[in-house]
Image 1 (cartoon, rainbow, N blue to C red):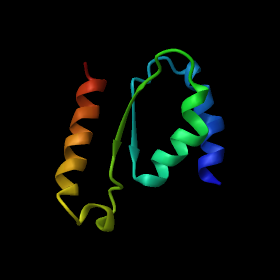
Image 2: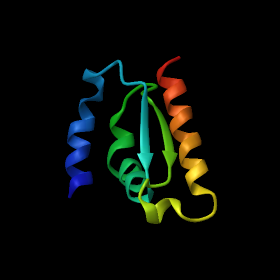
Image 3: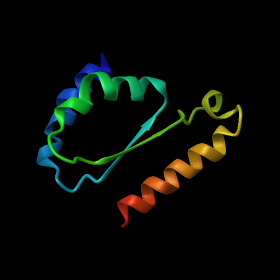
Image 4: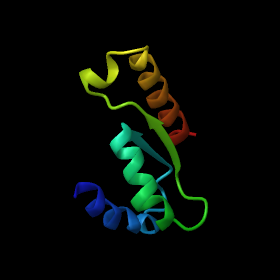
Length: 81
């Protein structure tokens, strides 16, 4: 339900023209973005950075902690550009 309610809030992104980057953390966020929200944005919209969920379980395997850190640094660099 949170994802469905979130699309209503994110539909107002056109009211927030300064939003440059959105970070999607985890599969649930990625699926929700694709299903409910990505189609609501007209024009170029913000850059979307996808990464793993930051929970201990989400970051414990296969170098995911480093991948998460890289994604966050990338999002910060985009936001500060």
